Image 1 (cartoon, rainbow, N blue to C red):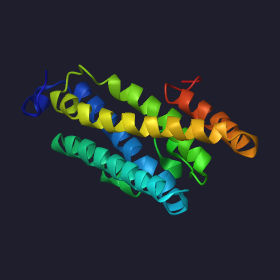
Image 2: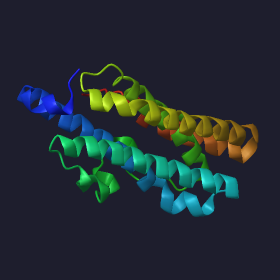
Image 3: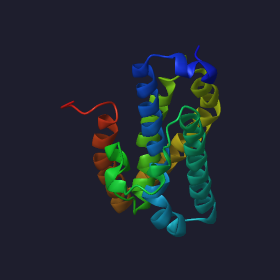
Image 4: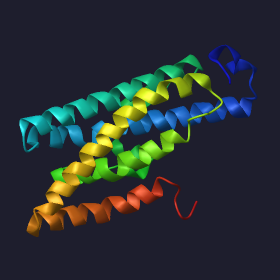
Length: 186
C-alpha cells in the first residue's frame, strides 16, 4: 500500500491519475447538493423528509471535504469544483437541477447506488489514505440509497399521477445512471 509519505516516489503517471480520480470524485460529491438543495430542501413533503434532505446534503459535503483533503495532501487543489456551474460537472448526472420530489427520490435510488458501486472499486486500492475513508463514506451512501429506494417505492405505490411521475423520473435518470459506468461512445 502507498502512504502519503510515498506518493512523491510514485511514477508521474500514477500521481496524475490519482489526482484526476480524486478531482472527479470531489466534483461528484459536491455536485449532488448543488442539484437539489435550493429546490428540494424547502419543498420536502414533511419535516422529517426536510431533515433527511439536509442531512444527506451535509454528508455529501463532508464526503467532498474528505476527498478534497486527500487531494490537497498530494498537491491537487480541487476547491474549484465548489463554485463550478452544474453544466460543467465531470459527470453528466450532476449537470442540471432536481426540482421535483420524484426526481430526488429516484436520484437517491439510482445515482447514489452507482456512486456506491464506484466507491466499492476503490476498496483494496493502492492508495491507503483513500481506502481508509471508504467505510464511513460508503455507510452514509447506503443510507442515501435506502432513503431513495423507500421514497421511490412509496411514491410509485400511490398509483395514478404519482406513479407516472416516478416512471418519468426513472426514465430520465436510468440513462444518466448507465452513463456513469462509461458512455457508450467512449
